[in-house]
Image (cartoon, rainbow, N blue to C red; front, side):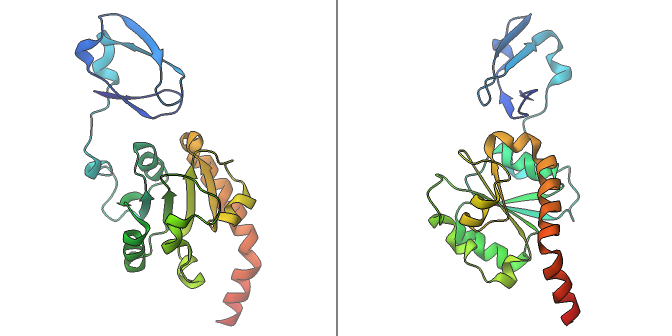
Length: 197
């Protein structure tokens, strides 16, 4: 069985047959918040375990795509779903570049195996795309050790937004705030482009 942590929303998998017939409390493996389970009422709380390829099955077939690049995780997929995107995973930036240039997904979530100093070498096949191609999507760097919404770090890594892994549970609020900042920042640029048409 799998249920979400009430604090960070990460799925917690367990064998329900190993739980006693009473309430038990233990720390979430991800955020260490206390999580309580009662096997007697577990059947009403459980979320079925889904195969990776079927995580977005409840989204419409025409839902916009989010390209997940690098490390794949249920938290990233859930963040994409929360924002209304259907996740497509590419394990490497090279593979992601091919997918990106075919479909231009509106959201790209970069999840490096290890966060290094800028520039992020393993993601360069995507971050060095032409400005025309880059403007078609919103690039988000997701990693531990980041301060969410830090514009300076986003600039250094050549992305639109940085999000700490621990903040993925608040992705909807972060997304709206980032979109508002992005619109305000590029308002004059968009007006000039429109005037040239």
